[in-house]
Length: 221
Image (tube, rainbow, N blue to C red; front, side, top):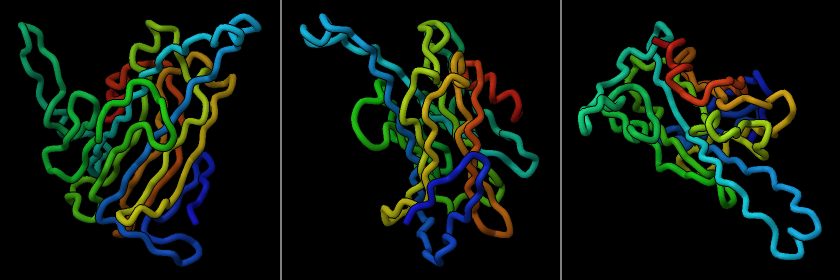
């Protein structure tokens, strides 16, 4: 049975306290969320309710070296005279879905959070990831959250979970919206890290005001 993590709790990704082992050849980090339903009042209910606005939450991963830094932030590209990026570095996000190693990738960009289960997934081949990578930070940001007056205080059922190569859920960290998240447009959800040749997983749940992951990246470069 999967462990329901509390903030700050750390587990071994290879086996749980009950001795159950997990296949880390491929680990799926799933992120999910819903948007709070607006109270549309009597007339809204009578005429079919109010269409909910879309929230575009983005799953992101930073691969860190032994110094706790992103050693390769990637390169930028010139598109129509503008420098955009970052590509082909140790950052996985909506414009750079695949790591150059082929060992970690983002499955796609869900722009609504609609539907049950994972809304976005980052898949990692942990057992074959190069030894130079000691930690992976998983975070989520609300795209243009500031501009659209969107924040985590209006997000419900936010979670991150780890699933092994055989589809067995290892752990899940639930983080429902509350007043302390008002105005927060990003969240450092969790981290996977090497210790004593084993992979550990720690629930973090640290909110940030920014809606731009590059602001968070500065702490790791």
